[in-house]
Length: 313
Length: 313
Image (cartoon, rainbow over all chains, first blue to last red; front, side, top):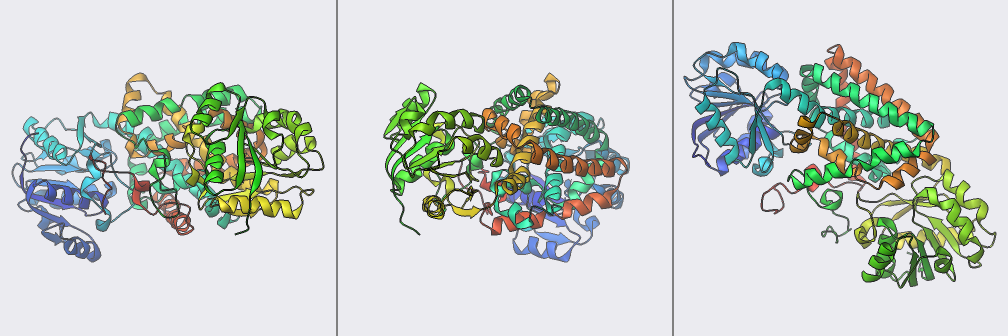
């Protein structure tokens, strides 16, 4: 692992991801000084109380001053304005990156504002939980998770290497690809799953015959699984869909086409088609577990006993 | 809790649910003798090796002979033929029940074959994991989960009470309702979630080869959650959809209608609609957690560190 220490790490935004970076960077000694900018006084207060940053600023310009690593950790819809605002204060040779779930739109939002004496390298750690805010972060969030970098043509190789080493030091595996390809892959592995989870929870919320309380009571039949990612931050996800429209609509088209096929099979009592489709899917989960991206425990390792002791076997 | 002990408990089928009942019934002393019938020699061997049954029969008729509690634990598509087969061997006063995920179809499949000297009480424990087979079961599976009974008009009250006490003793909370209402509620809380999970995993599986390995790598962005329930038993789920067609198609219609609204909002950059829908869903998860039907741990309590120690905080 390459030795990597930054002088001053500036996090623009200190929610789940920003605060997890702060904690991991501190734990692994990756920055001499860690500061953040946050819009709300409450976030700044929590970040300071938890001692995850050395200073918390209202003004992002103050945060980036003197920083050799700047990470955008706010919803992607805020990037363009923030980039314009901080650009004049950026240090010569600073690395500027982000953690947004879309990448082509980020290149367009931040890129034009960047002076040519900084290295702009968009990034996306594929990690998270359904929780939000500075108190929700933890240093282990990135361990064994992939971080995708989509370096721009102008970024220097040594800057890309240094940023890769930073993520590796926090436990991530790092991959680089182009922004458009990232957006297509993440549309199916992340954006569509969130969309349909939000959607089914909304559908259930609208029901009249089935009382709301019954949806809650019998959610262990499968529904509760979807409520987890549907509890994710609404602003962040609104921005993801607005900024990855093309790939999301393409993948959504495939999803609904396939769903229509299943619907037809149910209507026409076509058990063979159902069985065939339902039999394809176990192998994928097995591969995900083998790749270290999922727990092998049944039911995600949820505790099944009243006294909260681990379940058997 | 009512004192409840059966003389001989016969489980038709010894998969995840059947073997969990066997374990829980044994643990809580709910039956003097526990036997099963299983189609495959392998299941019978495993059930005997694990000592979860006293005897395992090839022929379900042998299993139900002398039993005062008979539980169908096979896919619902097998019920009708099995019911016809075992009917002549059923004991006077036996309780006959099942664990199927649909109920109106079960009434039609089993009901007509039942002699009037037995109490037929369809049932559905809303519990499970994505694993199948006798080795996958565990005694704690039903703790704090709801078991829904849909008693037929002819079942005696004292039989319903005794069966309720049996489920309560295994840790379940018991509710009764009519079969049609069950099927509507479960369509949205269980059947549609499984259908769309199977569907998105299928959609991903169809993507061009290059993308396939990337789906695995970046699945932590949300996709992996869906692979869990999509790893459920294909035969069981084929039968669920074939036997709850009307309610599933009704709920699926609502789901796709709502999804079209989201699709349109994305296409037309309607961030307000997206935000509004995405903001409704956190409250439902909170209620599910408060109702004891879900873990309050972020990310289902998945382990986030390389050394498999519990994550913080």
